[in-house]
Length: 148
Image 1 (cartoon, rainbow, N blue to C red):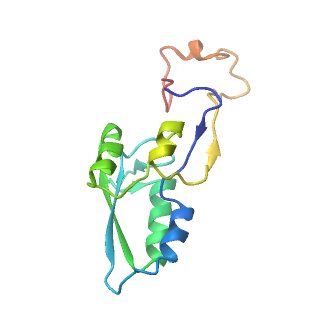
Image 2 (spheres, rainbow, N blue to C red):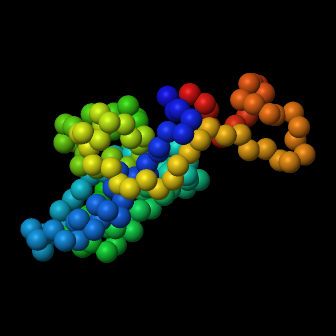
Image 3 (spheres, rainbow, N blue to C red):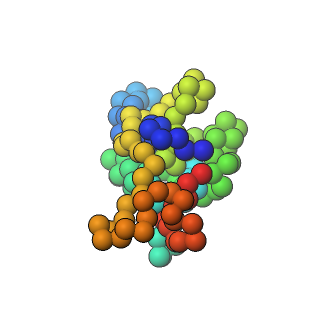
């Protein structure tokens, strides 16, 4: 699924959307509830911590916006990643925050925030570990992510 050099994006809702919300002239006194869907993975963008609370860059960005935009109240719905965009399409959620990869078809249909990082498939090991030099060398070992 991930290709070397592919551009990955942070939360679909990020500071760019937050700025758009801040300038919304139709905001009313009562807070409008905005449902945000996320899968709770991958770290560090969205995950469930030891206290069973959703956290991570994407989730924390939405919570920061929630603190400064009183016209909107953001709530989270944890769901399978495969359900996020269909839930967005159906109106079940209004925002999907889950480190989505961008592609031309998605950009035609969805608004993306500015990229928060670029990623290439890499392995990081201690300098003195000479046993791992390529992806095949991690067979049978434990990692925090899988290549897919």
